[in-house]
Structures are given as C-alpha cells and as structure tokens.
Amino acid sequence: MKFDDFLQEVEFDVPPPAKFPRYHIRPRSCGVLTDKKLRSSVLAREELLERCATQEWPGVDVREFCENQGRGVIATQPFQKGEVIIDYHGKKIKKEVGQEIMNSTDENDRRSDYVFFGPYGYCADASAEHCVCHPQTRTLGRLFNFAAKGTTQCNVYPRYFVAEKQEKIIFVAARDISLLKELRFDCGDKNCQNISN
Ligand SMILES: [Zn+2]
Image (cartoon, rainbow, N blue to C red; front, side, top):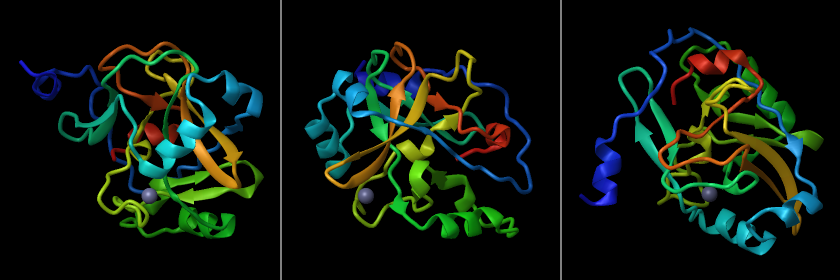
C-alpha cells in the first residue's frame, strides 16, 4: 500500500464531537522566538523564510476527521522537539481591525476563528482558505486545532519572530512528535476546543 493511501485509510483517535457554539471569541497569543532559539532550531533561518515564501512544508497534511470534527493537520513525518513545523500564514492586518473582527456579533462571520494576535501589535487574518500570495496552495497552519496546554494532545506552540523585516508566526514542536499525530496547540481560549475548521 502506498503511504498516501495508508494515510487516507488510517483511523484517527480524536475526541468525540463537541457542541458547536453559537458565538465565540478566539484570541490567540504567543511569545517571541529569539534569535538564539531560532539558531538552535533544526531549520536554518534562510530555509525557514524560504518555506514561508514557497509554502512548501514537508511532513504535514490536512485530514478530514469524523463528522462534526472538521479538519485537522497531522504529521506525516516525525518531528523533533524544538523543530519548526509550519507558519501561521495570514494577511497582516491592524490590531484594531482584528479586534473589530473579534467583536463581530454576526454568527455567520467565521473570520474570528482565524485571527491571530501576536506580540508588538502584530495581527494576522488567515480566514481566507486561499491566501492572495499563494492562491494555488492551501496553507495548513490555520487549520491546527486546539488542545489545552499540558495535555498530551497539545504538541506544538506558536512563536513570533522577525527576520529580514518580515514578521512571522510559526509553530514549533513542543515535544518529539511521532508519525500520524495530530498537531494541536493552545490558543489561550478554551472556547477553541468547540470549533471545527
Ligand atoms: Zn500566501
């Protein structure tokens, strides 16, 4: 069996479907990745920027889980603790605009699920399924599901960094991650666990 077919057929151990909330707020926040830490990462800075630009990230794939669970992202290769996995790829917007999106009371407005607030007033909107800069590519960082910090499901964390005047949010492996594990992070809002992508 080809590896890709195997991935399609394998069953994933995911929690039972949660009730979908009528309205929610999903503020995300994260710390800053220092230059020193980035240097100790498995991925070199140049390669990291290259991957952000091309959106070619090996070792991750999107999967449809069981009904009501929506989509999630799995590891199709093992990752070492501290390894950069993928970026949170969104359009940079003003913090105030991000806040306006979060304050929307329109139940059909799902953009708030994809707004990411970083440090130094950085804010990214990844609500578009296909970004303007990569219209042919489906970016996967935006599809990571929630898991509470400290649980076994929470295996990645976001970090903000600046390189060559580019601001990025990237996901880093919080521990060694084995093949086929779903990649989940704690966005700082418990309501996130009820959201399906
Ligand atoms: Zn893009």
